[in-house]
Length: 312
Image (cartoon, rainbow, N blue to C red; front, side):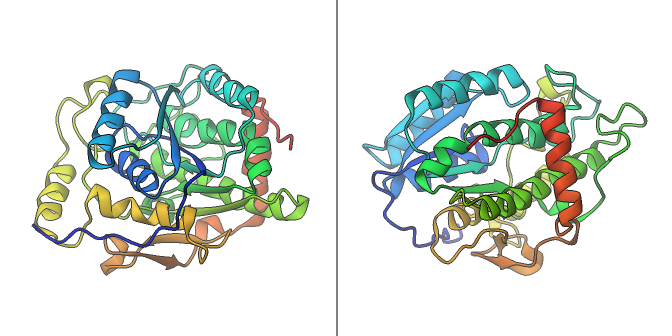
């Protein structure tokens, strides 16, 4: 068994963090590492029982971990508004927001509750709506937002002319499109926060390659069996070859969110061979995420589609 990677994380006692997708995979490991550093972690999940099970597993490793399981479906703007509304009513400043949840390559085109293509609607629009609604709490804390992209954001393009893939759905290209849009949003958030003096830092992370449920059998997503890719990734991960584990893959987001050396508008990911695994380090921002014009276009388009506008 290869030795597990870890990094130094500052003392987060008294800090409030929110991690999306914290019920399994990389997300539960991000939540666990933040909790071990002393943060109180909100874990908004689609299935409460699954979230409570994840919280129990974290507490078994870190007795006394402060975890708050709540309900959230990023494929529903109504669900997002409900969670954000509750947090705004409570009024507690939010120190860390890690936008980690996502869906990947459903074999058949699927739609969110609001009629958006599932990957674009969940990976990007859902996180846009959640983050934008939580901006007052983030500004109150001088908070940090870390958005988890993917190596897929370094290929393909935003499908500007058919964001919902109503013509010729291609699962992988749709996934890349959603992650590029999401990354452009995160870059634009950092620019707007700096220009307006919100005191919010926004940056990017990516986990490299690791065995998670994104490519595993998920009947609810139309995938009846594990993909060949996830079988290979699991085998390599067990042997410590090239790719990471969920725990090591979580460290890039943890570093980006907590390290005093991590800056806004930057990308952090594994530093090993082809950035597939290894300890986190700064990396060049993917070329597709560098255009300020594209980022502004994504922001304005997302406001129009979700009906959510920044109010800090």
